[in-house]
Image (cartoon, rainbow, N blue to C red; front, side):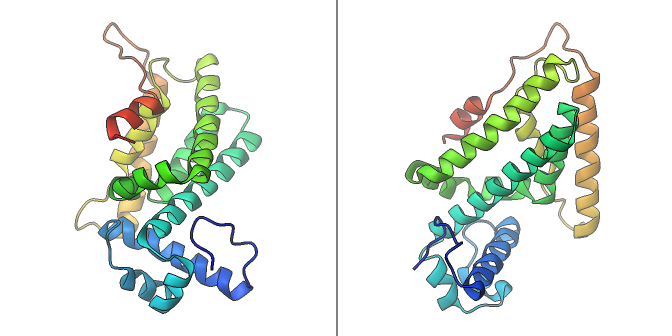
Length: 217
């Protein structure tokens, strides 16, 4: 039996496909209904039976952890590609920010947080993957600041919290229009970070450690 925290590379093709469908369905369902959404609903969206879901993910925590790991894996890969393909570190970082909005992190993080605290405390691989992604993004931000591309009083914690707040859906808005609006607002937000220089009231940059402390992670 393989749970959500293990490498799925050893699974049969059909098992890998089922696992992928469950993770994708869980991401959408959690984004819409929260991390306590019925597992039966996730299985239905994935087009599998509830027994198949439990075979891959024996409990809710393992499924939430798998969604978080998958997000971090994708972000890590996107950050690596962006860093390799974009000579401008700020363009590379903003590309990753838009990928975060595309994957609905702003909707997922608040609803997953209670479960994610437990997952991070109990699962070393998840914490390691998170640290790798954070380290890469902090490096891009620091390089952009050294090159004078973004104001110096911004920390990665400021940037990521902004994404979470900007990406929350507007009730009653069509999903496609909401997605377009989220990317537009993110672009305006990021342009503002570039354009302004810190004045007399500039704040201390918020780090990821600050965010973790504030959220109780």
